[in-house]
Image (cartoon, helix red, strand yellow):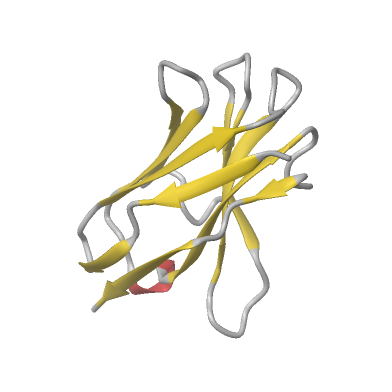
Length: 118
């Protein structure tokens, strides 16, 4: 069974930055893309950003384009989400995910809380 472990969440003021990390282990190979989703209180979980396993292709929701950057570590089993110019509406639990056909995910992390104060 694959395992995804997120870290890096926290409390930041509006305009600040945070970097989330996701470490993947288990049977996640070249057929999987990886991505980040978020779920705010009272809202459905939504796709934020995705990246291919063997290609550098990246995908972003319009709400984060130009502010967030998804990338992979050199070992390819770590994915990062650099979040800049954070807004209060970015407040949510952020989840790492892996899937053969994102935004449909096969595996989920446990989530990490990001809170942006105004």
